[in-house]
Length: 122
Image 1 (cartoon, rainbow, N blue to C red):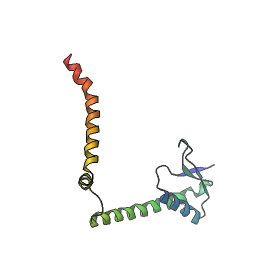
Image 2: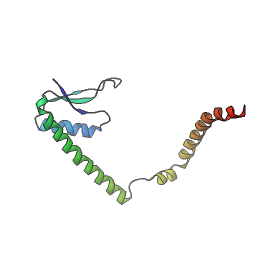
Image 3: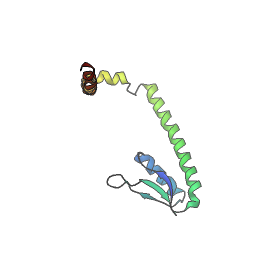
Image 4: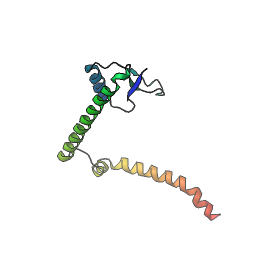
């Protein structure tokens, strides 16, 4: 019977490809189920042989640990170099967009709260 080994929903393409290559390189037989047209079915990797489950999980866990450490290091290096845009830098670079979004938010809040304020006046 098939065994679910890795869900691919919201997984970046490069990570999914790396995991598929990792399983192939270690001669672990698997198949992929597509998400379907409306993403109702489960987009995942499944093992044909349940006996390979422990080995596959170990490989995937090791890969994800190394990947997370690498991405954290890359992100920290970008922060140290000043390449990461902060909220205030983004705000200053697009002030009109910020004003429009705030106006929309305030308008929605007004529409949401006004009926309750009118109840107290009646």
